Length: 78
Image (tube, rainbow, N blue to C red):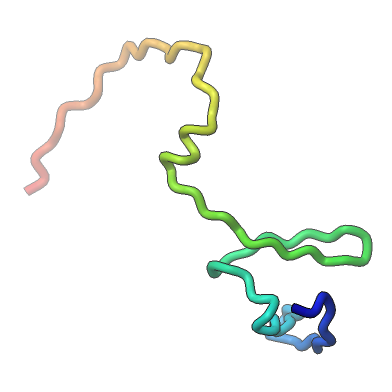
C-alpha cells in the first residue's frame, strides 16, 4: 500500500469533503477527526458495548443518598 495518494477536495453543501481511496478505507461508518498543526488526522471510531464500557469504569465510592419521597401510585390511563 502506498503511503501517499493525491486526492481532490470538493464541497458537499457547506462542508468540505474528500473521497477516501479504497486502500485507505476505514472500518465502520463513523470516525473521529482532529487537527495537528496543518494536518487532519482521521481515526476509526471503535464502538464498544455498554458492558465493555462498564467494565472499564471504577466503582462509585460514595453511597447513593436515601430518598424520602415515595414514588407516585400508578394510574390506569385506559
